[in-house]
Length: 268
Image (tube, rainbow, N blue to C red; front, side):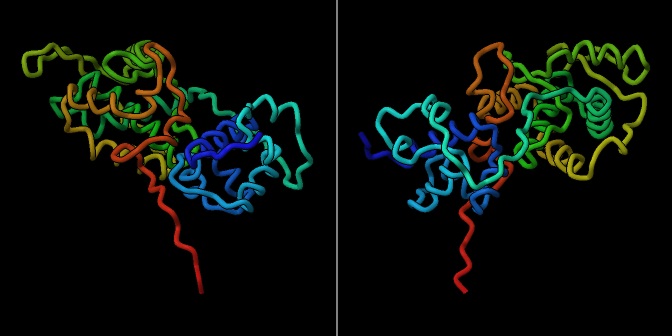
């Protein structure tokens, strides 16, 4: 039995099947010759799609259109009833973050080089600058910057094993930790004792980090923590759980760093 689906329901089903099949948004958009921004809008339910577009998606993701639009559609049907596709399947992208320790340390050093002298930049601010650098980069390029995993904690997202990493940097003479007071509150701060090796950072990575620093490094810890609580990846994660990078693709302004606008068609 078929049913009338809303644009949001169709988008949610497409996103679910796409992830089940191991496609990134960029990969699927290339397969169906659609811009990635248009696909994002479809998955968010902000843009409808015609029968031809749905047919192209069904071929790429190997599902039956009749089953897809049925009232009782489940992703189990997609696994049980594959159909022949003319589209070659690309290698599945591994979305599980893997920490690149050397790069992570250099990102810490670079951030501190630029803003450790600011009195507001203690541990809490540093954690949030790292988080937004990592997640903003992933939204823009669908690639890991440092590969760090983040947990949802009461004061915002925090990189896993960060205390151990910073402790290692302290032992190696890369950082100095000092205890200060800021607006009446005790504060732990880190000062860089060596410069970051910028050869470890691509130009695109440095650009994203610079934007985060320029936007947020003057904010207080309380303000930055409050702001991080509004970010979709943090909001959609259970307390204490690891935050899924893929959630950046459901961000809304002002958090989204990528413009997902419908691209104008060339009528000429």
